[in-house]
Amino acid sequence: MEHTDKKILALLRTGTYELIYVPRTPAYAIVNETVELASKFSRKAGGFVNAVLRNVQRAIELRSVALAGQPPRKILPVEAEAGCLFKTDLLPDPQQDLALFLATAFSLPAWLIRRWLVEFGPEATKYICIASNRRPTVVLRPNTLQTTTHELAAVLASEGIETNPTPDGTGLTLLQAVDITGLSAFEKGLFFVQDQAAYEAIHLLPVQAGWRILDLCAAPGTKTAVLAGLLRNTGQLYASDADKVRLQKVRQNCQRLKLGDVDIIEPEHLKSFLASKPRIDAVIADVPCSNTGVLARRCEARWRLEEKAIRALTAVQKQLLHQALSIVRTGGYVLYSTCSILAEENQMLVRSVLAERQDGRLLKEHVMVPQTIRADRMDHDGGYAVSVLKT
Image (cartoon, rainbow, N blue to C red; front, side):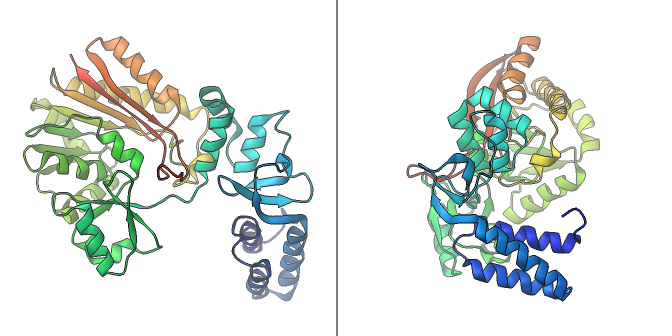
């Protein structure tokens, strides 16, 4: 395959993926369509693709079967309870190397799996792997300064968009694929998109009317939107980010959502802003991280991230947490959060910083691992959040 044209290789990968992971589409349709596309390059390419995909098809025993009771080396997990069963062994032996087995089955780095196994154990790690490959639910959050969940559902229904309320009633899950930016409800600023893990993280902060809050890493602005709804136009929000391009997204979202009480602070002006010693009641530090809790949404991150990069990330994270604690007033609060599920970016780091400073008290801590859909709750990303009182 190393000498195969990249475009033909891409077609082979797409066709193989569909044969394994899209069992609802008939196999003959997948093969025929892929061969037809390849034949546009040449008849030889079409014949080659046909031969390879027919071999893949013949190697499959059942395209969709319950995982329970099947030989683990012969079945590729596709969903939480189902997978594609092959006629011969395909995966490494889990008894000999469980990390390598899971890494191969779920297309994840083995070093990351080994860390999860230590932190969460075999059973939880398996479900984290499954959730890291899920198709994430899109959750729409109502802009509570303009509408409610119920009212938003009615507006979307009038546009032909089907939704269901989230179990806690704070948002709506989309039941169909749609370009949300083309909806009038989006243009009017009635909603924004935010996963349950990020939404719950913000609520560890005991926001009070009249607070002045600084969001240090605000992009793309959804946390700012939630905070604006909690303040109800009674305080002041400041939003900044080290990335000027991403900060522009915050500005655009604030304008679309009509969040009037948000001051955007460009990164080069943050130092002078802080030098004026404004009274800050709370600082949000949603820091750059490994993204290990959001691999279902950021598929490329699993191969971009290297184990040695964690140390560099924790250095930045520590700096930002120190900065947040230095900015907030005594008696104020810091909310530190990541979209990582690695303890060294989360629990271990926070306790290390608090031990160094001796001016913060840990209040509430929340760890969420990625979750697939279950009967009692919706799927969500993973992440970490902790609220700290400045003493």
